[in-house]
Image (cartoon, rainbow, N blue to C red; front, top):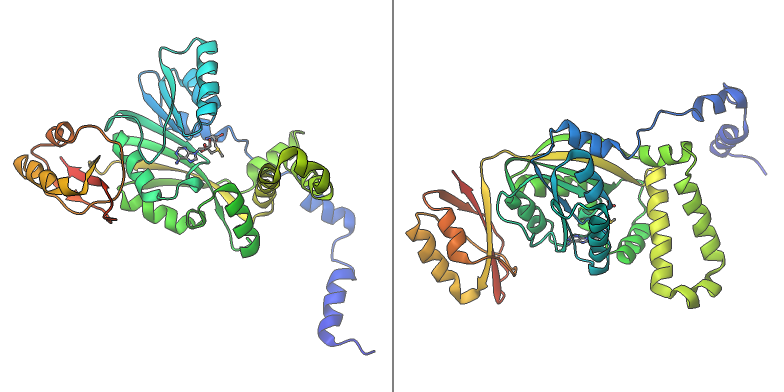
Length: 348
Ligand SMILES: C[S@@+](CC[C@H](N)C(=O)[O-])C[C@H]1O[C@@H](n2cnc3c(N)ncnc32)[C@H](O)[C@@H]1O
């Protein structure tokens, strides 16, 4: 059978000789590109000027490992929050063991309702958790609220790239509770700006940490690749032991690492500034109380706009009172449910 020109050129590209010998090719492609380790994140925080006397919030702190390490390194006060109570109990035990209970705390909490006062935080550490936040604008507005003017937020996040296959993405996101929309860096940045952050710096970490772990011998991603293969081949034995959910989560977690390594998703760290001299006010109230809010705000010389659903917030009068004499711009989308969340931007 005759070989078409196109097929012939493909075969030539695949099996024909290269300009370089195999040895030259491998020497070129298998050399280290000096990947940076994960420690660059804490180093960046150091570069932003954190020190003793500052207040740090670690949002999505899991077992508080980073909260403690940062508090130790910088001598700052630190608060870690995470919704998973068992992890917070581990964090509290670690803090007690370290004898740092005076200045480090961990509590159950959600980014959507951060248990901290307005402008009570100087540095916010947000590592690898925003992909789980369904209402990103609410979570980021909360971050903006607790950060004082001049506050810094260090964000580390994974975004999908054009190499991510939609079917793979749907499967892994569904299994791991990842909000697909948050996988877009454009959406992410737009949301950050909309709540008042200035994006001061972006650093494409991409596969560097993963390369580093291969080169330092810990070989995390190779191990994950092998684990996927073995788990898939040994599904029948593992499912009864792990349960289907945990089995799927473990495989998805390994795939997540492999995707980071091969560029289907890319890691990025960035730091955002709250330097627009605005503060956020957030509170909840039953729908009918909206008119009371309007009255109070008018009394204190503040304007009022629309609202969005939320729950759980400090007393309204105290919060509005704190903002008297300031003009106000309110940004919201509104859902008309029982409880209403108002996010107000206040200009001094
Ligand atoms: C991938 S882990 C990252 C943990 C830690 N920040 C780190 O970098 O090792 C994601 C964490 O975010 C937490 N999380 C998920 N949704 C959250 C939310 N809405 N508010 C606060 N934390 C959340 C999870 O419970 C989990 O501990």
